[in-house]
Length: 591
Image (cartoon, rainbow, N blue to C red; front, side, top):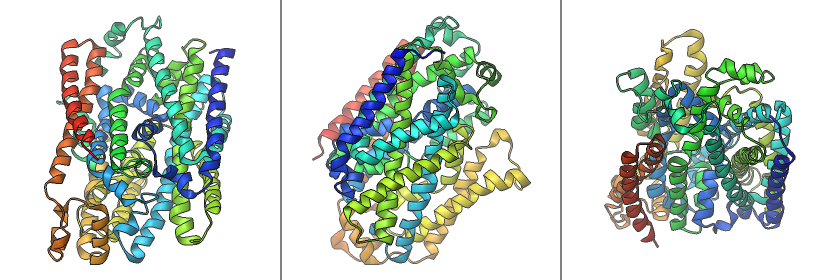
């Protein structure tokens, strides 16, 4: 593959604009920690929504989708499509609750909802556990995707790729704070979308494929097209559809799809102008992320089955790629080497944008935990604003360094995705219920976190070595099922056998957040003057279901159109329009 002068010019211009945004926003971002991490709580829904989509446009996401499609077909994507239900629950139930908390980070929530030393411990531990450990793992998967892109398309070594990606991202992230990240995300999103769509269109026209009809009819592809896995094969139907829709979306914790919101999604909601903008941002994100964006990746993944049907074909085509980095996820980058000059530059810039937007968000989010929930809360409460910003910038550099080191040890994106799902199995229900069930306390969350982690270690490390529980490879989904069951039973028992939070702590939370009263009745019997309106939650759940149907209809309408099933595409589009009208009317009615 030849990179022309025009390609390098496009890539160079992208780097310059990204750095310029960081420089221009540096002064205001450095004025206070609130500006650095929340942009003054004055951001509009459209900028926040695009930023959420850009962040999840990570370069490892098309690699993950490619791995899934090549391994399990289009229907294998339900493993992440099911998280739309989580996203819509956040839109209509939790977005406004987060905004009312007025926290700087979602971990500050712990000392609003719970009291005493357990709450303080939970806040500090989660800051390190999520902000450093989990965050570094997530960034490492993104860096791994960058390594594969750099190796296949530019012939760079893993270390060369990491140095280039890390240095540029750290500079603009540490200078511009969240506002710099948001503005850069906005710019990067449109480059990423243009590159992905244009690449998919070009790949279809390759001589080896010829047309979309030829691609869909190819024997390597035709059995991969169904939206629904084979219902007669339990080893496909259960893990690919039943588990994600019945259990995974509400029971597991995964970054960007946290039940009840959280992480960088919560950070965006907390920086919104008001509750309406927080809802609008998360709504746009879910429509774009699940309904509009997957198909260019899916098309390229299907095309790769024609040109690189086996991993050995990629190994032959790219002999310089280290053996431990070869996998089905490499096929996405491999397909992009067929693009012509000019388009190569745009697509490379789009992939670099995907890498940098995700890394910058996670760097700012992780450093917000280090600064707000560790340094300012426990180490130096009287630290000046300039000192807090300095700590934030230094922690940004440290997190990137750790992520780069771990990226050199990872092999593929799907492996990391499955490990993260296993670690979070069983904790999701806590994050959903803690707003609405007064009985949940700090020990509930500590127990859920500890048990799920230990169960994950057992299934990922101990059981493979000693086979204490026999699990067929085709039934690997049982690990998640065991994890959810054991963790859920554990945290429920701990909740019931430990003392509830003090009434005053609970009442202060209830007054501030004003959640639906459904799970607070036992407490409110003692304080009847506190109870709020009834029936609100049922309306919100109804909107969540309408929104989910709407987005799935958008997703399948595009798919039917690509497959040439015009009648089905029209029906799905009509369902999407009806659902969209209901949602838009509800959103416009908000104050």
